[in-house]
Length: 267
Image (cartoon, rainbow, N blue to C red; front, side, top):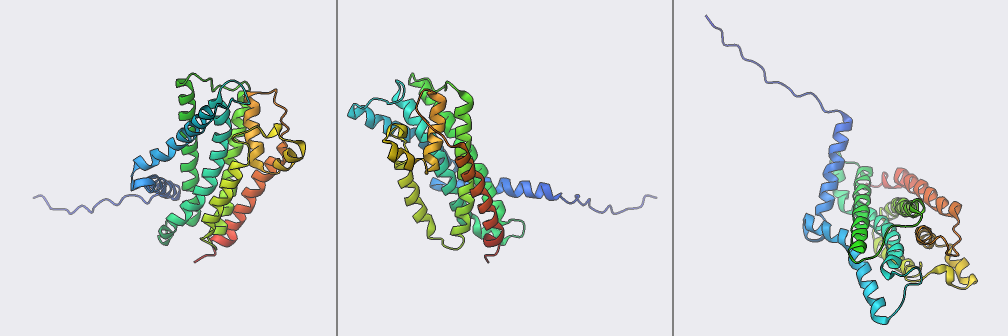
């Protein structure tokens, strides 16, 4: 005679902490991408395409006014070598701060930490930056310009340095805006001023020596010149690499300390 034996339901094994963390980060990244313009993934595409539109507007204005490129024969390459690293820094340092404010309500869930919201936004912005750069390079090829630098290593390291500085300053911004949320608007105005005066539309090295020495205190100016040096090694550019790396590692250190002792202390 067969006996009816009740088989207990199988219990799935508990997830490892690393798996939980990766799921949290991936969920935050997907939410981040959908929280842009329009609340869907098409809005994220708009942000990726913005550097291309930005460069097209500047080149169109230069062409309309009959201005020639002060570096090489292509105005598009000249503008791209200035705008791409400057926008990479500007977007990352700004969007990391905005991402923290947007995702802050999610930190009421025990699985989501404030640190996780910043890491997710940093990863999204890095991917967005590289996608935007790829589209810019593709656009330059389509319009007959040569976007391949003479010194590939110099150009790439300059661009990576711009991303690293954006991450470091972004961490500092998170610490400040966790106390003063209105700082977001003030920072946007500051970065706009720095962008216009950093040498995106002109070569800073051709300015008078007194002005050039002052402009070099702006690390964005040196990052732009770093990238352009990869395209034209003959330019009279003087880059203080120690100063730039001091900004990168100094801002990252200060930002992480602020996250540890200020951001986590906020209710």
